[in-house]
Image 1 (tube, rainbow, N blue to C red):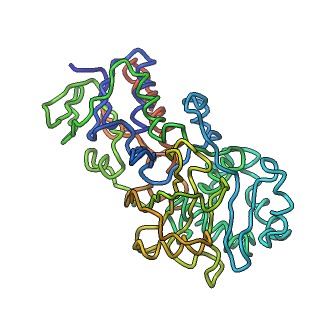
Image 2: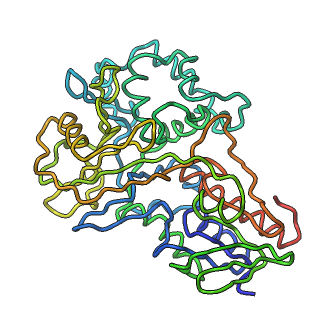
Image 3: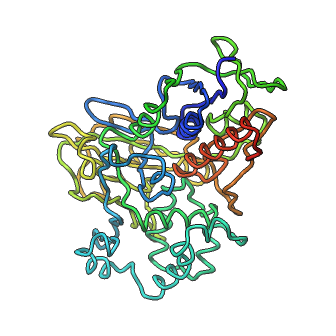
Length: 422
């Protein structure tokens, strides 16, 4: 037998499962089909730039990040907690009043903060802000769009800020995501200052993998997982491995193919990365477009940022890095480079002719869709000796991936020790 437990997939869920199983005194073999750990959390180096595969940020307020990750060692570089908005009147800033008190007056003067809508939004968020589980355990849920309508969040803050910002976070332009899930996300934004590790987002899974006594085995593709009755056999392109249990922590679609569970619908994004000589905006905030006729974006870009203003390590000396994010799929449609450049020129109010496109990441499987009702504890045991883990079994987030991997590991460890902890 090759190991007590075989973990398939060295993304966040698989690595956390492996760490927890190792902590329980079990031998673990981690198999990864690609050339490095990380799953959907990967970073490329291009001409001295760090470009993550898709615009991602790490929120230290996530409970699982606080519990399982050494955030200080990642040397997190923080974005501003808020957004900047381009509309017909120019640029406005809306910032967290406690984290950026100097911007309070500018936020109030932006035209997007009206007492009635702010009160409605606060009332809608209040239960989750007070107690984290208030949304995830609530029996009532609805789509985000319907929930905000019912709460009376229907003014400029909703049309020009919330809808656009959340469409980029959720990869969902239609407001079809679970309102309870969005409440949990907004709670994390309220209590945390998201940022980027000094060495890119891939530093997160690399930190986790470095704590394993058996390093993950890269470029080992899994074709099948068989429950033998007394254990498992995992068929790879290099032969068959045996174990007492298996945790399938591959991507949501791949996990479904290996285990027979139903694959979730996936939402997609495209991230465009530009090298520029001079920063077009010396601010650490995401930039939204509100020049459209309905108050939202006039083009395909849902948000942009001068990443190197918040995370200087992402660009070489003398250059800056700008990202732009567009939606994939029927709701957002696909965008071409000319349309993206037109948006960026309007949003930043400057020519982008000299901006060099250095990378474009089209990721149709960015996040599992999270429709209502929110189910944040999906079944993980799919066989006598096989479990499945990933953000599709919890919540579609870094937090959900970590929690799912940890939960699966505790259940497996309990079974191997004669306890039923499923």
